[in-house]
Length: 338
Image (cartoon, rainbow, N blue to C red; front, side, top):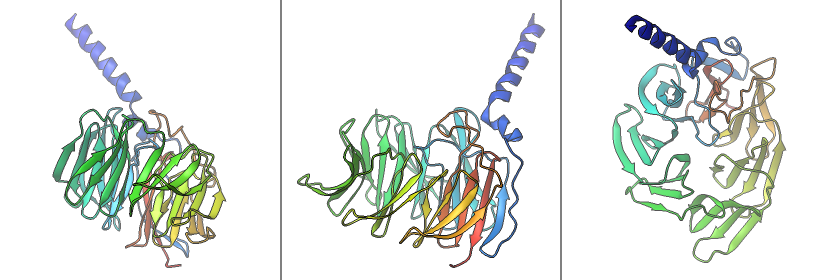
C-alpha cells in the first residue's frame, strides 16, 4: 500500500511538472532565432530557455545603468527576477519572488510591486533596501517613475503615489471614475470616458482633452515634452504635453510595449519586425526582420502563456533588449547612432 501511494505521488509530480510554464520552456513553439549582423544592428547576446512573465498590466522588463532586469517564469505562482549585464548578458544577481509582481527601475534601485507591498532592491547587488507595506490595497501593478515619484495602480482600485526621496506616500480613494497616470507641476494626467486629459489638481479645471476612443492598458511614456500612448489595439499616439495636441498617430500592429530613448521609439510588430521611429514625427528610421513569419502569440493576457514580447532601450549603451515569447529568448542588439 505504501509503495502504491509513493507511485501515485510520483505520477502526480510528473504530470504537474509537465504542465508548468517552466517545463514548457524546454519545448518552445519555435526554434531559437539567430540574427545576423547588419549595418544598423549588431547582436550582442542571446539567452535561451527564458520565459519572461506575461501580463499586460505588470511590466516584466526594465533596466538601469547598463543592467537589464527581467521577471522570469518558474511555476504558476513563483518567479524569479534576473539582473543581466546589458553588454555581455552575464548574470549579476537573481532573486526568487512570488507572482504576480511588476518592476520599475530608477536611480540606483529596482522597485517591485507585489501583494500589499512595495519592495526596493539595490540594482547592482539585489540586496533588499526597504519594504513598505500598504495594507488591503491588493496587487500593485502598472508602475511608473517620474522624477522622484513612483506611481502605481492597485487591484483595490486605489492609486499609489510614493515619494522616493522621503519615502512618504499617498493613496487615493477606491475605484476612481478615471485612470490617473502622473502629477507634474500641479497637473494631473489621466484617462477617463472623454479621452486623455490634463487637469489642475487644485481646481479640477480641464486644461486640455484629447479624444482617444480605445482602451489604454500600459502606462504612457512621458518623454521630455511628449506623451507617448500605446492603445490596446496597437495604435501609437504622440501628444504635446503642454497643449494636448496630437503630434502624430501611427496605426500599426504593435506586439510589445513601446520603449524610448531621448530621440527614438522602439517596438516589436506582430509580423516579426523590430521597428525604430523618430520620436518627433513618428517616421520610421530603421527596421529589422527578426522572424520571416509572424510571431506566435499565445494570448499575452492568459496565465498559461509561454512568454511575452517586452522591450527596453538603454540610451547609455545604444542598445535595445527584448524578449521573444514564442522562442523563449532574451536578446540584446547594439544600434548605430542614426
